[in-house]
Length: 410
Image (cartoon, rainbow, N blue to C red; front, side, top):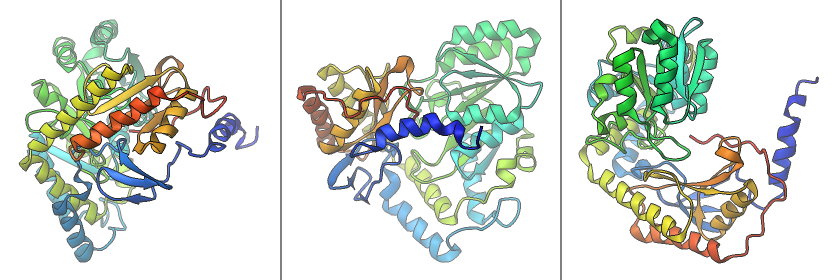
């Protein structure tokens, strides 16, 4: 087989979509006007699929911090953290995050993806066992694959299934790594972390929680689901990203373990990757302080989430199982998903389209994410766009979208 022959099915699937006027894969956003508005082609749209939970991408404090860093430290470090890529800002942010999460150590990575790859793929190896929720993010699966550890999946958000599988492991369970997420990025539901923490207390193991979508969103201080449920002491490692609530790019891993910092000398995705740009680090430091100083942003975010969730339920749509800032609308087929996604843009709303195999039972979903920066009027306009779709004839935008691959949202 020729080198690229393995992609023939993907080529056929992609061709189905690029024949349409708007493609969901790598959508070009031509202008950004604010955290909540932009332009796609000729359509001015409300941005309702950006994960910009606190709306900090245009925060004046964050912009000013980034500008000053850009002027004084340049566009990039041009090196890894192990070489010339550790600036004072990187060290300061690690200390500030350690203080915020009340952890002994924090290690910064260049992306959230690399945080998973560099932490999980280094801590575990052949002979180790990883138990992970079936709906965990692709970066977690890739990290496990890289490690060579034995992977045991348990049913999504099913603590009983986790317990059953750990009991089968016997004594091996006490050294296994359990991996879950705070808020899951597709359906917006949360891990049953209280129950999982109790299982860990009884059977042993290490617990890693990826709080990518829950930092700044859940918990009294915004530390995520573990804080919300008062089980932080049961969580051995917290992973997260700067590309959601903190409005930039980068990732981190935090832990109490006294030897956690050894990962700096063993993690290839940390050692061999250029460090985050100084301007990005500066904006994250500013965003972290805004998040701490303005808890009202979190209050506003949840008000918007409840507003949109209720509006869609009242229209009769099938939405995710729990109220959260991630609000998916589940549709019967990829064709209908494509139709909804394109029509929503025409009606002035940008959301994410997610297709099989990332969705259950061959369904599709259009995934909304709300922000503290959305106004109640904008939420009403999003609901209004969905209401208009209820009244329109549903002529599918494509004829054969079954089996299409997803763009890989996080």
